[in-house]
Image 1 (cartoon, rainbow, N blue to C red):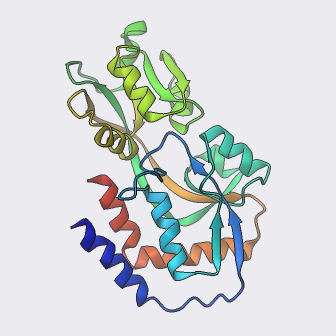
Image 2: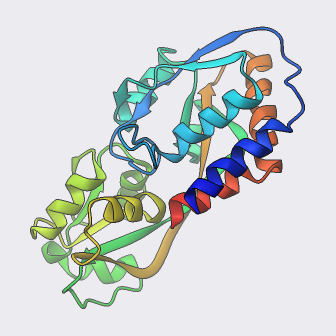
Length: 254
């Protein structure tokens, strides 16, 4: 089935109208650490949804070159690099009102996700709201990725015991398993990919309640060249109209 999907993507792109752009443009970007569903170049079968989207864009607009994926940085550093224009674009930034004041988010969104509380598989606690977590006090410590939009959200809730000592999903899951936190708060999309890839399905589980729906986008610095932003937008719209964004999301959700 995976082979069929790969062939299907290639078949679709073959019949896309040839790009109207003749000018070659190179945009520098970077990969994100800690989010294997987005960037996982070491896995040839599942290199990450953002890497695959960039590759599909290259098929419909081969004169738009995206470089820098061999480099990696955590979320906070990526934001600094956008602020400093050390990179031209980043694929996979969660949109928030604070970030919208600093960056241009390109429509359509790459995908969307909700956030979950993950617990150890032998923990039978029932949580409906964060008020339930607050009542646990120190016994309700919540692990979260440092510098993430999830950390910002938890701080805005107030009254929670937060551990943002790690920038990596897998490290946080291992901390959870070893009892160094009661909960891990993260994206359902990314965390489930990490659980599956590390074979942790028998050790951790997601609580059914969902929080904080978030759109994930390609983002430019605020004053980026409008023509280049439009070019990326047109390419992403083509991928969306062809169903490729949806198909890639489905692939990484299974």
